[in-house]
Every structure is written in C-alpha cells, then in structure tokens.
Image (cartoon, rainbow, N blue to C red):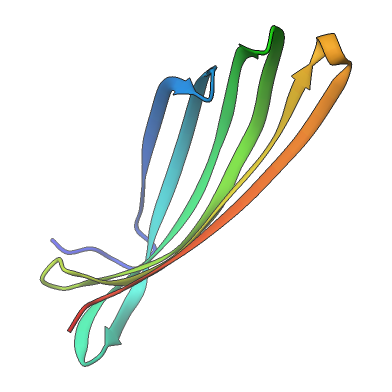
Length: 123
C-alpha cells in the first residue's frame, strides 16, 4: 500500500516555557498533504505541502509591570522527500502575530514576526 496524491495527516505540538521573563504556552497544528510526485536534481520524490496554525499566550512581569500576551501562528510551505526517505529540500514560512498588554502603563503592543527558511540538499 503506497501513499496517494491528496493524502493528508497532521501533527500537534505544544510547548510551555519561560521566555524573556514570561511563562509562554504555544500550540501548533501542522497539516501535511501529499501534493504529488516530483524530481529534484534527477532524484524522484514526493512533494508535500504543509500548513500550520496555532496560538501563543503567556504572562509575566518586567520592571514591576505585569503583562499578558496573546496571538496567532500561521504559515506553511513545501517539502520534497525522495522515495528513499531523504529530505531533498524545503521552503517554509512561519508567521506570528500577537499583542502584549501592559495594564499598568495602559499599553497594547502589537508584535509581528515572519521567518522564512529554505533547505537545500548538500551535494
């Protein structure tokens, strides 16, 4: 039994930890879909698309000021895996959009980040 184009599966990842004085929880769900066959540098493989969604939230204190943060995670990309199971390459984007609330200072601070990664196979 082999994989078929359109087959999909997902992974869920949760993390909890201290980041810059804040207790931060993240949850991310990545959905993968087999998009079809492809060839990279003469090597046959499968093209797999990925879409990720998630949340980030936390709270902490810096300089005596309590704060909370809440936001969303999004992005995705494409992986190419050889029929032998070797990663041939990938292009990925990860976007985070959140707001940090500091009630003591009556402030709301928007934060957005975008990270892109390109993975290429070494000769």
